[in-house]
Image (cartoon, rainbow, N blue to C red; front, side, top):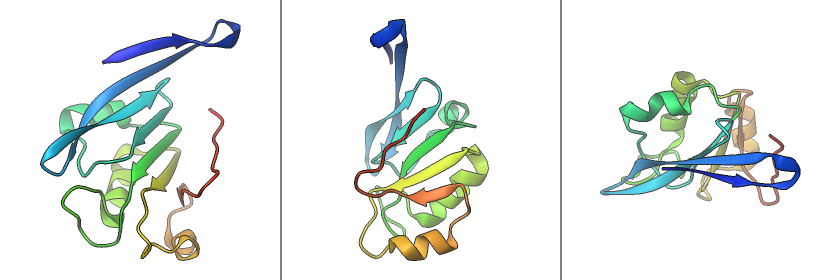
Length: 123
């Protein structure tokens, strides 16, 4: 499903919703202006939709913890997706307390950052 919303100065925001797997159910992810994807509750992107998530400016993605989880991506999953989807920047969200912000900054590839309260993006 796709929708357009007109904003100031005659510009449009295009939002495409894409179903993703969230354990035994589906949830929605969103791609905005073909530049930013938001996947807050997911543990799998369906292969038929991979192309929609490739080479984005920003990929904001669920990363619950180090260990596997039945309905959320873990750190190993998002590192694999980083290589596969090649976003310019990947931002990890939905972090459990065992994923320490400073430790993550030291071990993640340069294009991946953990999210934090108050984070804002310009795209």
